[in-house]
Amino acid sequence: MTGQLEGKVAFITGAARGQGRSHAIRLAQEGADIIAIDICAQIDTVPYPMATPDDLQETVRQVEALDRRIHAVEADVRDRSALQAALDAGVAELGPVDIVLANAGIFPLSMNPDPREWQDVLDVNLTGVYHTVEVAIPSMIERGQGGAIVLTSSTAGLAGIGGDNPGGRGYTAAKHGVVGLMRSYANSLAKHSIRVNTVHPTGVNTPMVVNDAIQELMQADPAMSNAMANALPVPMIEPVDISNAILWLVSDAARYVTGVTLPVDAGFLVNK
Amino acid sequence: MTGRVEGKVAFITGAARGQGRSHAIRLAQEGADIIAIDICEALPENPYPPATEEDLAETVRQVEALDRRIVARKADVRDFDALKAAVDEGVAELGRLDIVAANAGIAGTYNTGENIPEYDWSNMIDINLSGVWRTCKVAIPHLKTSGGGSIIITSSDAGLFAFPNLAHYVSAKHGLVGLMRTLALELAADFIRVNSVHPTVVNTPMVNNDATFRLFRPDLENPTVEDFKAAAVSINALPIAWVEPVDISNAVLFLASDEARYVTGITLPVDAGAIAK
Image (cartoon, rainbow over all chains, first blue to last red; front, side, top):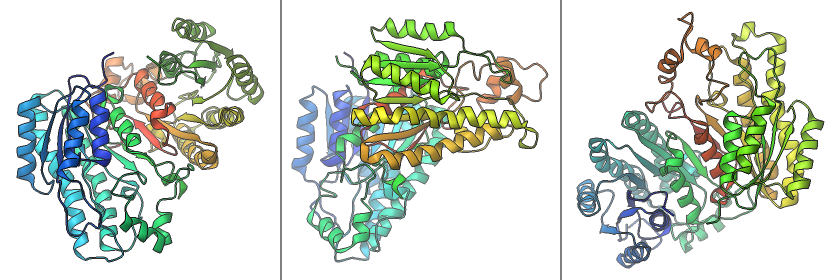
């Protein structure tokens, strides 16, 4: 049978592992070709190991194993010209972009707070999302075929969780900011039939959350572990659960869904 | 290939036509058996033609044409006993219950809050709010027996913001969000998920009629569908006047399926960007 995204091209940031890799695989399973971006390098204030070039190669391997094409580039979402060059090269190889997933994000939280966390998390999690959309939309508009953009926010984009550290406050502020960005784009891109929505995961089983620094912090600060308290009796959800929500949002099944904040949070937000 | 809700049973209210029939067909296409109820009767104060028993029979025909089973009953969501009998009989015949689409609703008459007659107000609340609560109440024991499930409550964009001349409808649809959130919390431990969908204008008999045309075009004496369309398009951000029933069904299907296994307590607009606008 034909996949739900047959013949489409998706631009995905943070695609080396975690949710980004899962999105690349899930969309490829439904027929999409992929332009995959990841920084594949460490940022000083991030207390867990970030993705590597080998991780990005593994995403390439898994997408190609599905007989889909993938153009993978090491690029930093903070660097707009690098991002533009990566997208342009991907489009030259795979064709114009139908789907944009602004997924790349960091969670710079540890027992040793660093004032630089604030700026780093704003730069990656908010400005990086802005750059991702900005580099993609001119060609989408010019082509005139519409499209779907999904910005990955968080439960921390709708609730004041995240703790007292500069990184935690920055994370919450950036993820809230992503909602404003989504609403603004949803409004102004509607006339081009480009839909823009956010997803809001609770804790997801990825290296960004499941790592020594975050576990240590959660044990030391009950407020942090409460920030992960779901209504459904599951401590954490899997990357594919976010991918399935995104697949629905970018598919024709959601052809008239835009401007929506979609929690995939095991009832975290309703449990307030 | 296996359907996305293969082997599941869905209870759908207001299933004779419009969104309810569309939900029955879409879920059946993906493998579900259906328990369908509808009042199939005129509500004297409602300014558009009612669903009929022939309409419900057509839903049955279309579900059976998909090789799925369906138990259909004429029942009113204001009548707890009739609703309970319908779902109990459906579960007895089809074996279980997994999905609830609490869809039945009316548009009512159009008046300012100051001028809504007492009966119209009470009847609206009885059908659009209490009727959904009764639907959930009769279904929840069966969902618990099944070890989990998904309830999808049809609210409206009018459940998230105000529309003049519809205070009773707006109040009932806002009330559904409170019901949804409370049930989501109460039932989470049983892995029963509860969410609401919030359509903009949908192309159904409840909306596509002269009374709605006049609500949207008070400036015209005899507004046509084209006049209505011109006003309706201004509500949405996307350049369309309305969405189709299948668009709501696709959202219901997503929420009902295992693809949304950890989605609960959410309000999901299917509204062409009306809220964002």
